[in-house]
Figure 1 (spheres, helix red, strand yellow):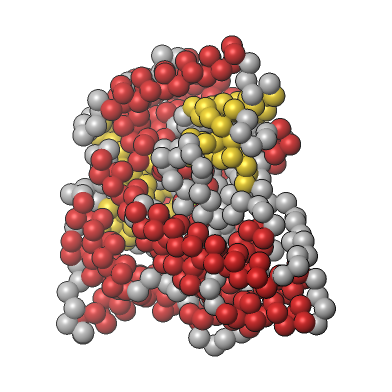
Figure 2: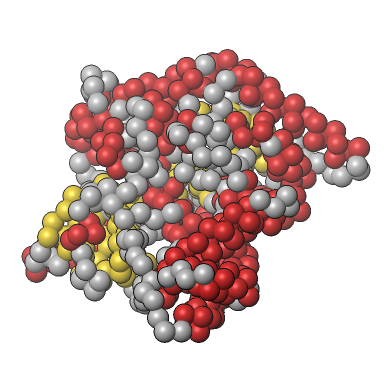
Length: 563
Ligand code: PEP
Ligand code: MG
């Protein structure tokens, strides 16, 4: 048995056999007939991509399906074989011929003036990567097909790789990298898959087929557990299932603490999440992460395609649907934009900062939103607002698009405009921002990373990434007070909203809506149902002397001992 300690990133107990996602350096050996081997690999890879594309379609991940379909065709393109043949003729080794051809074709495509074709550069890179892995006898990378129910162990996983996994087959995710608020963790929660991150010794401790058990809350991880440990985890799984059954009784109920009603809405990023939110009867959608419509695809989604997606979300709920305009940048780059590499992407051109550079891209989304607004109660919020002038600029864009659509005779609906409070300056100036906005929504994931200067994807600073740190709580309190002062609602849509201690503290501050991953909607309702106005007041005063997150938890623990 080998014990490791990671950081819980998505709750639940995982028990199952290991599948490793290898990403070590490798070389493709020379063979007698390289062109024959290459042609055969390209055919296999094309088929594999086609199967993955179909799987993505059946999971309603249409964006991923389009990319996989395009890559499947690309894998059969004679340009691959021609390029490799050229280098072999000049005496290159098989591996050199493959890697040089990949970079040359990528560079050639990237230099094309048509942005659609230029964006294929990333695709050809991925196709070559798969072909090389196939020739080297390694399992494929992104779009990994699990052989059966398994726990996927990897150095690192991208948001796209995670989104493409089949939730029926992935029993758990364990990674070396990635913080608890990285987008991999967020997707795992939305899929209801347990995850643990920050396991620095993981890849040296597990072999393919080993049995592992882990707890997605505490971060405890065991490879080849002793019988007692295995029995303990079996029991934890039974308890987790019983808790889930108890929480399910809250489905469709409304929660209130005293006379303060609290909406528990869902965070969604795609159609599968939306279906889950409907199934859990969430109080509307509190955060629709629209950037996932843009990632890993050769071109941005059209106005009409977006209109369909937003209209469908609005029709699914009578409660408000809060759509966040695309938050590209940070750990969510969009391949079609071909942006320059930044030293510090989380401090660079991300969210609203990108709109100013690509106004037409933003206006396409704004037009789709204004058109879709006729279908329901649409609230639109802007990510990464740091200063009031950004709010004014965004308002001008909405006014411009509204006038444009009206002059075209296109019907538009009313929207409420809000900002995410995730940059500390926005929390500090929340009362000023609130003057020009209809609502505020606190993104605790980024607010924590920026308040504590701790990269949310860097496992080495996980201990600082704590939304219960009093510095973060104070910024939340300032935002909540600003909302009360200006008479606009304030919600929380970061992962902390699903933490029972944080949720209770937020409600005590006067926050009226919590937005959580679909599987957490009813557990969140169940946890809040146990609170009273008196218990919240006592809790807030008990934790007020704390100087860090762990101390807040220790002081809060007696209030949550029966949950
Ligand atoms: C947040 O930062 O808390 C948030 C909800 O946005 P995201 O996690 O997508 O950055
Ligand atoms: Mg954010």
